[in-house]
Image (cartoon, rainbow, N blue to C red; front, side):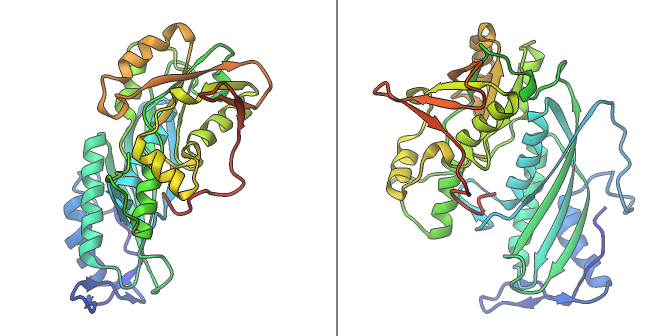
Length: 349
C-alpha cells in the first residue's frame, strides 16, 4: 500500500489559483485525504486494498528484479510525462532481462508547492501506462520535502517479472557473427525533452518515443528466436548501449551509419544543437543480438508491433578488437563509437 510516512497540511492555492501541496511535520488525516483523492482511485488494485506495509505476491521462479529513479525536467514533455516514463522504464528493464513484467512499486517524493492537478494527471498517466503494459502497481510510498528540494516530483519504481527466456539474455551470451538489430529510429526522446525544457520550436513536432517494449520482446521468445542479448537505449543512447554490451562481452561490433534510422527532423535538430543522435537518449528503442541466420525472422516479428515497426539490422558482432564499436559512414570511412565522458543531455529520465 502507499505508506503514510509524511503529512500534508490543508492544500493552499498558488498565485495561478491551483491547489498546491504544503509540507508539514507528523502524520494524520491530511495524508489519508491525499491518498484517497489522488492515489487510491488511480491505483485501484486488490493487492492494495489491505492497506498494509507491503503486497503479498505469488510468483513463479526464476524472477527478474529491477529498480530505477526518475528525475526528468520538465515533468511533462511531448509524448509523455514523468509518470509514463517511470512505468515504461521499469517495464522495459524487465523485458531486457527476458522477463514478463508483472508488478511495480512506486515511491513518490513530492515537493511543497506541487500542483495537485499536475500530480493527479501524472498519477493517472501512470495508471494508464501500467494498464497498457499489463503490469500492476501494488505497493508504494509518499514523502514531501521542502520547497526547492525536488523540482516538483521525483519517482522511484521497482519491478518484478517472471523470466521466460530459455537461456540467459545478457552480454556474456553474445558471440561473434551475431546480427545487431535496432528496433526503430533514434533520438526522439532526448530532443523532445530538451525542446520542452528550453522552450525550443522546430518546424515539426518531435514527440518522445516513450513506450513499453515487453510485447515485441516476448513475441521473439514465443517464436523461438535465440535472443542472446537485449539492451534498451536510454541514457547514453545507441552509442552507450553498444559500448556497454561490447565491453562486457569482450567482443567488437561493426555498424553501418546509413542503416541507423534517424528521422530528418531529429537529425536537423541535433545538427542545429551540436548533438550526436547516436548519444541522444531514447525511451522506446532497444537492441537485439541474435544469430545471423535468425535476423530476418526476428526483424519480421518486431515489425508486427507498432513500437518496433522500424526494426532493422544495423551491424554484426566481431571477435576483436575487444570492447570496440566501429561505424562505417556513408562515404566508406570508419570511426570509433565511444561513450561520452558526461551526460550529453542531463535530466532526460
